[in-house]
Amino acid sequence: MTLLKHFGGEGSDVSVHGFIFFCFSNFFNTDLFRIFFNTSLYIDLLESVNFEYSFTQYSFLRTQSKKKSKL
Image (cartoon, rainbow, N blue to C red; front, side):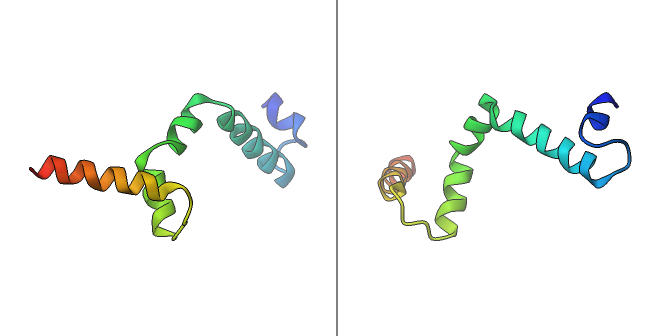
């Protein structure tokens, strides 16, 4: 409750937005955030959006590993 008051009082939009920002800014600084963005799920998301980044090397390695697993 004191946290919400710090961001602009109870019931106001500022407090809600400030609180959400506070939570997200703490989340961005955690290892969980870095782990999430290093997962293959995120890589797949980037590939589906057609990101032609340095993920082509990763894709090549991943397809190679898939071929090996089928053998």
